[in-house]
Image 1 (cartoon, rainbow, N blue to C red):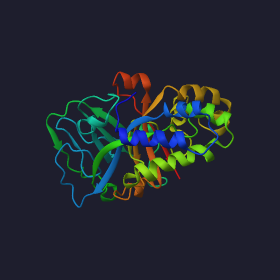
Image 2 (image 1 turned 180 degrees about the horizontal axis):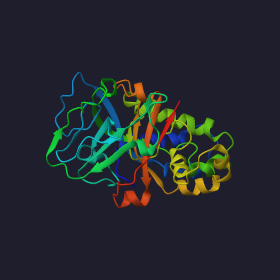
Image 3 (image 1 turned 180 degrees about the vertical axis):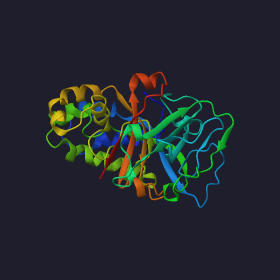
Image 4 (image 1 turned 30 degrees about the vertical axis):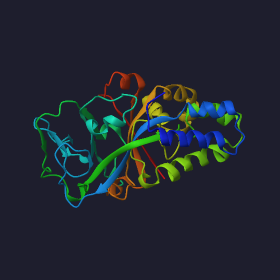
Length: 297
């Protein structure tokens, strides 16, 4: 199994094995095998964008190689939301899924109809740069509206354990076998994770691991988008395809717009952006075809 902070892992295993519920011992052990490591993210509000160039952060001005310009769409600058330096999180990448160095960037566009972040993959630029030589802090484009600047916040990484979302295909067996599986097992286990292990850092920001989705598991969203499903009727009709396609997707990044240390909520509301890719792409460390989804409360 993965190498992880043993104390928290042992606490979670003990909780699952000792919980007062109807699960068989065999099924308890089966759920324990579904525990995955992720890279948790806590944030610290900054009074100014004074972090060292190349540090992970939310908002402020992006640090990019001098030969790369601020991303635009139809000649309009996109909103810089976050940059994640993988070298800073490497010691928490216990499954060695990420490169040793490089930076992920998230730039999002605005849907003018509701004056919020667009959820259209074609109205965003989410990309990875491996070579971080000659980084410079980009100045805001003159055409960028003052309201479209995100306040800076520092990112700090830590170890975090995750379980599959309660509606994820990995828990289908348990949901079918046990009536009210969510209420008498999953909910209390999820609360234990949050309230006993990670309460000081309880945000929805995350790198890797199992998705912590606000609605149904986000891997279904990735599959639905790949299948170009546009309405509820198609969703029902092609559910079996969605279900099978979802098994090929992995979470890469969660960007929590509800984080009180940022002002992402002025465009992201009470929601989370999820960035994912196919498992085979992650294994090959290919980040040129990232998918995006958005869920809100």
